Length: 280
Image (cartoon, rainbow, N blue to C red; front, side):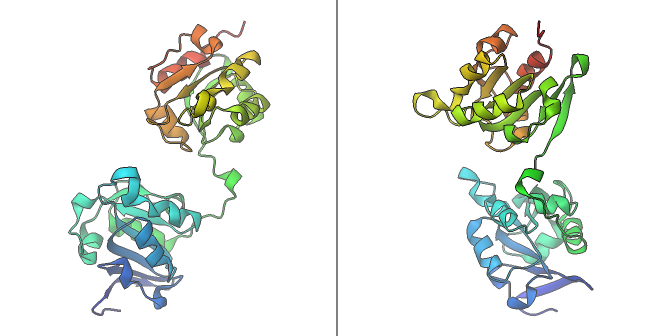
């Protein structure tokens, strides 16, 4: 279908890829079937407009991300609704031109449902939109989306394991160092002790009043678990890979300091020290 507001770029039995200049140009007939490539930014406001008509998937530009990630905030609005969504690098397109976004755009950010469809950062919008049209996202429970990955093999079968929350730890992690992205307050310490990892790095949660976001360090130390926190201003809460990749150590307990972990150290370096800790 081509009209003054929508340009149909591809059609299959599953629906269409439709280019529009604005998220406000999405219509009821796009509901549930069409992938909308918009020349709107992919923030929360355009996401609300788009979801009035609940298309299959949405692509919009990242707006340079901006303060507090406002330019891409809609990605997680869509994720909460299990709708695939992706952001376009704003420097690759002409703003306000949906066809140009489709023809020339390059993906800069994706949400989890889009990843389920095979969309990856760096791919063209054309390819991303086709993957969204041809594939459906999964329907995982919250406890199935752990983003668990082994980033380093240590001695004696130990490993550095990254996951988004300490609650995703397993029995196997009693031999591992867990790098996660929740706070290390009193409740965090309870989960740390329940899992009982060989060592851990979590977030300080922004510290909080009386440094309550890292209060669990001493509790874990008393339980014989070496651990540290990363500065929540530098690494994203809820994103384990950000803790590992971007994290800077903000505090450490006595057992971790005995391994050489220091404030200001990169989290990945601290994790390497912890996984090589001599438990005797």
